[in-house]
Length: 447
Ligand code: AMP
Image 1: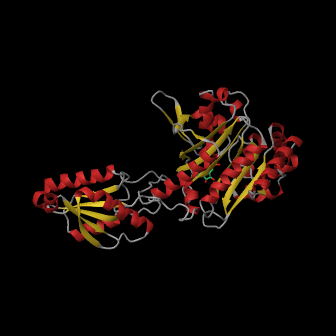
Image 2 (image 1 turned 180 degrees about the vertical axis):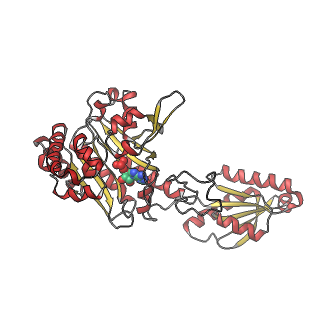
Image 3 (image 1 turned 30 degrees about the vertical axis):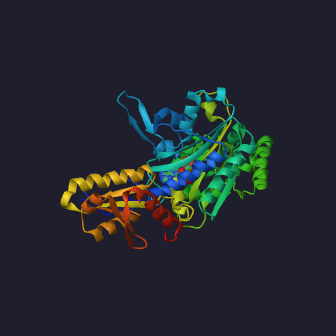
């Protein structure tokens, strides 16, 4: 992104023209890849029957502390919280699920739609240490299904996520699957972890010593080297699943196999947010090009979050992917921008500058009204330079407008690819420009 290698002539102490650390601009040259990715996600969601939800970028802080869990890194260390003018604590959303659930409850969607399928696209905020693929404002695409607790929905969502990642040309990736079990399983697993870690307490990081009593599962999610070193001997979740949870998990695996979605069972993944139960999954990039930040996204079931936030017990499942990481991993072919070729209108004759400007803009407007993309150069520079600038702006044709052309009701039309120029009547200009633009798209000569 534009700010990752900042080379500015500004003094180091001035922050007036610096974006906030970890928050990046996307310049017009990069934006087409973003648009193509977002369009691919929207199209994929539409094919699976999902509708878009757009929620505000901030919420009352309590939604996240209660929803995500006080002991998670996100809530304990990374939230952008501030007091508004009314003295309420607000937080810039660190993820999309809590906000979507809040909207689902606030608008009592469950009363009218037994199963709701939602997706979202937008910025998220976490005060993490910035690195390649890790930012403080980042962007996610995500999807959620409310009201259906069946394993089939878990499998369908994973299939949607995997298909989307594949469609971006990210072939080197891996789906890892685990189950956290539900209510009682999670509690029994927490007890098993406590039994394992208590004799090793002194070897744990300070944070994890605290987690041992409050929320032992979070020890598995810790990035501290001393905690990572002890993880190998920890008991596996899959070993303590109830029969019902086990059946749910086996069914997810069986359907994914039937759908041809590759996955591996990995009992070590637990995900970073507290609300998950039963199925959880992650998709990571495996070529190494993303370095340490190779997790593209993931998600899982969160059957108790809706009731924890005050709603009727409603099963739910979802996922989120980081747009920046997907863009780092995606192939250029998959995200080739379908931008329309452009025509430049060049004002070239200063002798009656006002008239030439007005006519150049009128011609541009007429061409635009025919659906063509037009950029106008009003600077009366050297013609060669104007052509170069036009080409840099992506123009494949130039319409040259001077006093003489206006008097004759003609223009000069230049094919910037074939480097040929001819005089064209104003009445047939649009069709001639269109032919040139279309030819540039198909790569064939016009005549
Ligand atoms: P999470 O909501 O933590 O499960 O994250 C889901 C995905 O969002 C991750 O796999 C990343 O692709 C992306 N993500 C999370 N945090 C960041 C961040 N700080 N910067 C960039 N991407 C992120």
